[in-house]
Image 1 (spheres, rainbow, N blue to C red):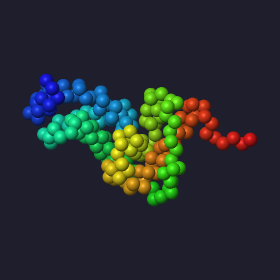
Image 2: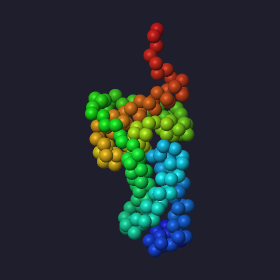
Image 3: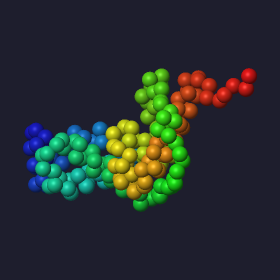
Image 4: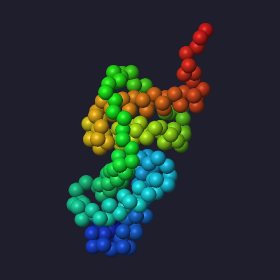
Length: 182
């Protein structure tokens, strides 16, 4: 059965089709959930809850654009909604951090596993903004709307996330991040 047929079967509450959709997308969507969750267990919960929402709203999918993109957005929104109900973002009035002061990450000198590990270790508010902006390609305006914060706060949180990641990468690769006193 093709994906379009599976989706149509899911619209008719076909449990076997739902199971097939789950097995088809769960591995990829678990990675999405892990990016927006504090830990593995929370990511598992977000994955399950996300699929429940997908199957409840599958009637709204009109075959315009990809099903995977539509479902991924539901997964992200579900994780963010849970996060918003648990924690409030700290609003930053102004850090006066210019775009050109934001460090670029030398991520080619570290493994993908290490990079994902240190991203996961970021404070929640920084990790959420970093993931949405850098990894998922949302604009600062979209991130601000999704997290119910200002664009200034998204920019500040992104800059702080990049600074933390740069320090960890520099330490990991042996680059000295502390100025020499010589």
